Image (cartoon, rainbow, N blue to C red):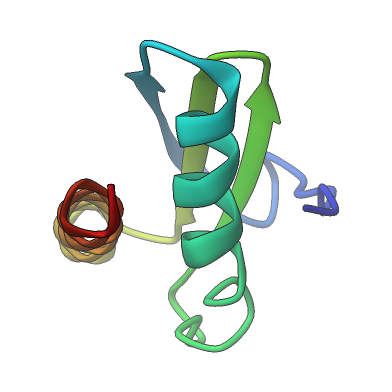
Length: 91
């Protein structure tokens, strides 16, 4: 996962989502699964960054407006939940 720098001037609305896992392996698996979407689902109104530190996965969503921020949060939460479900099924 490669962090991308975003300026607050470019995206005035920002939110950080943190997801805690029981172990680093699960955080890595979920993080790797969703990180491939960075840059793929961005649009001209929002973007995101995915980072992991140990057992914590962090998704930062950056947006030009609050509607785009809400949509971005919903999208990324669903992506993380889906990756968690797949990891759970895979064991």
